[in-house]
Length: 421
Image (cartoon, rainbow, N blue to C red; front, side, top):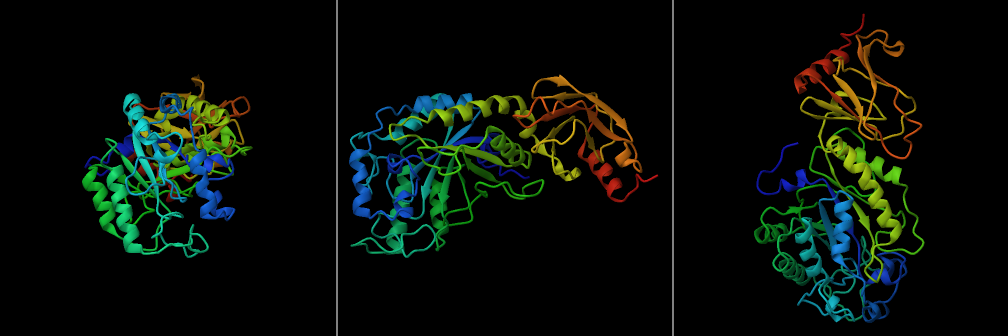
């Protein structure tokens, strides 16, 4: 995949990030869209402003967790669908400064990001259930009807969005990415142009007022072996909500690691979300999940962040990535056997190492019964599939020489059945 070469290449060099959904909705402990899903009137919902007082908020603690988990950047929800703003905005009184806490949590987070070397990206919802000029006619993530006294006007609302985007991209230092959410019905390329003018090198996603730079599959792993366009997949540690939820159904670590392995081996970025509690702390369960995944991620990072080479291999349980003379086998699904055959690769590697524990594996170049009409392929054996059942297995193969040309030629010969005796 081609890079941009204009300051946006940080995106291809920093592949794993933390998503953070935090706002008034955390008070309910149910879901970040609680106002919409439970049809709470605006007059009732706004009373939560007087209750929001995250006295235990410590952005340094968040960033230490991100570092320990192997994450390179963070995406913070500045304004979700409820319209409440988590920064000191001059465009509406519906913001963090009007709460009992009364501090600019975004400014505090930006400072902590710089301290720990974490790149700051911002989330901003296109729908707004609070602003009087926003459109709410029961469309995608819109209220079923306008709030009393609202005056829907898309031009005025876009002007409001531009002024807020200017604040966000002017007052908090370097902003590396902008994550719009819920594509609006209108297109206005001037908004993204404004972001790029204020923050050269910013990466902008595909859910806003223009096409943007990259795609954002959510809670799913796309089929295929490679992405044709820059991609950042997003998933949360919990199945029920992105914001804080009491009694959340947390995903298993293995499920999340397999998702990360597949997405990143396809060449995509991956952001994993946590929802802080109303006091500002990240739930212990969520924190533990991130730390455990981070231990695995650090061991296998060279493999899943290497260039995708799965186009040379067609297998449902594992994928290939390559870095120079090293080829990695990334098992994003559970292996059914203790051995795998890498058809059509017929070059003997110098070594086969299981990155999960550093174990040297048995590797041969041979014709197996299942491939009896072929020339010899790489056959890796003795994989401890039943001992390492809690994490995706990743194998490093090192060769004396390896190139795309060699892989392409082997793949082409196999497709043309030139290996058949």
